[in-house]
Image 1 (cartoon, rainbow, N blue to C red):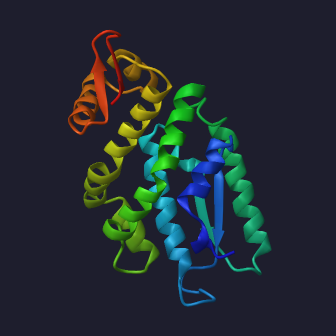
Image 2 (cartoon, rainbow, N blue to C red; image 1 turned 120 degrees about the vertical axis):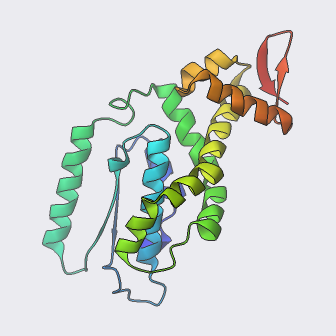
Image 3 (cartoon, one colour; image 1 turned 90 degrees about the vertical axis):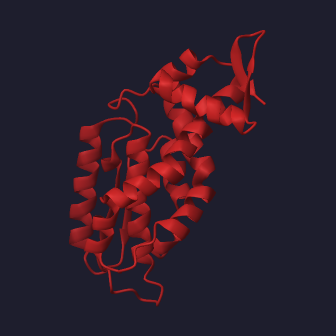
Length: 212
């Protein structure tokens, strides 16, 4: 299967199923067997996926991509063995990052639900104009990318997590803060924004936020 066929949903579904790391192998860049150069799409996906992992409190080194030809079996073995070693050093998913089981589940589920939206943002706002590995790495480390990511994706992920938790049961700002590992002012900002948009409301009787 072409590495360009790999989707963020596959990646985060694997993490949701308990995988401690995800490795993607692709053809060498600029040596595509087709005309799609899907391996550049895969590179973009991985660099964006690393940003998302970091945003939700997971080590971005849990996701890796490497490019090689079908005849480079020794290189494949070397790269995968190195990745397995790295993942073992990091430890079980969420534990070394200080995330309890509930918080980890909510964060991964929230990202997975947002994948169609993230895919749209990536296609329309996060495209790299020059197809070179250097250009892709440079763009995804740039201030421009950080600004776009925060404006289009980061806040949506927090709101998605909040909505998932409120659908389980009514919760206070303090409860949401503790589960999500965010500061109270940030949670309050998202609750106020969601309230103005008609997504949540404050239940005076229970003194908790609930879905609107």
